[in-house]
Length: 496
View 1 (cartoon, rainbow, N blue to C red):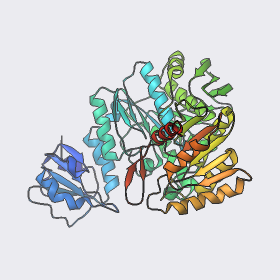
View 2 (view 1 turned 90 degrees about the horizontal axis):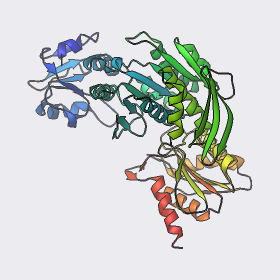
View 3 (view 1 turned 180 degrees about the horizontal axis):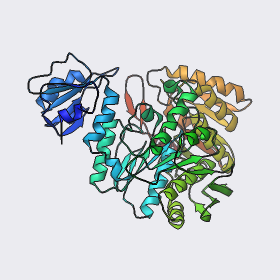
View 4 (view 1 turned 180 degrees about the vertical axis):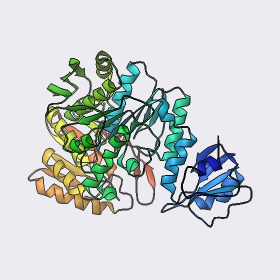
């Protein structure tokens, strides 16, 4: 435990209202989780204000509140720590409170537009094969050893993240693998984390509603390489970078540490060759300083070759033997919602994938084109309240690389789904030619339609939501799982 006075001393310009001697037992921003002795963080957002819960948390036993309001009058018996700016103050206070747990474990961070999740699961599998006790923080879930927990952001905020690291340390985790989003880097959610290995997968258009320009987006991603290069308590720091991606030059420039380059097209420390992709897997060789690694894998797609190279680079950086890496990768199966095949007794193939960026869609479609026997039917949409410039781009790609396109809703959020479809349709019309396309707002109907028109040898790609089991509409969030709906639609064929 730390006193409020100790926490205040970390922040220039901080002041205490009430007693600074109170001992803080934990830091929370969710009023429902407050217990005796906690410091309650009064976040202010567009739709909520933590200050509205001060009386409630006082009754629950909170010792103090953290706020930026100088004229605050806390309830009797509760202190206030007033700071000039919330996020920068939390970046100092929270890691210190938890005694910097990341300094006592190895930490591998993965950033990039696409491939982070699959790469993180591959790395986890390899480290487990090497006898490590691994924690994972990612888009789909958090894993501590063999226990899984739900997660709501690719990278949690600094309070939750430091709490997670402290919990992992308490459970004897020795290596943490985590996806690091651009939002997390921009908002310094990873403050106080000492990374040992940083991986860059690729950079393509995404999140421009937030970053505004690709230059901003690229510069934000590069922050991870500044962090891994900075002095810390641990040694052996490495940057693992996809040299085939044009943004790699920026990442290399920010990586003042050991570097492992990987690629297919360019000369690299790890280079894939003799790539043979087929419907049920792929074979290729990786050439590196260790010699040649022959791989025969159960996953497929050129994009997965890059994910494998990234995982190999990261685990070599963590001193895992090549033979252990090979053994783990050859056992590895796909991640939920990442080129996930729906198993059913039908003469066509249904694949669900999380692809929701132009590059992600292109990768999945090009992989399907390599293995399809007849036609590709693509069902996809674009999220509402997000970067709208990618909508016609994704429409063009779907029209160019598919035989039949069914545009539909993704998570429309507060936007009119018909408006989103019209923006997608602009791109479709540029490339569709004489091919068939339909716009069906209702995602369930769109999936049913694709399965209704499928013929033997076709591949149906249902893109955009992957592992997600919900759909965010204007006024509510509903249960929706592409995999379940596809199975239901396939089941309906037997009754026709």
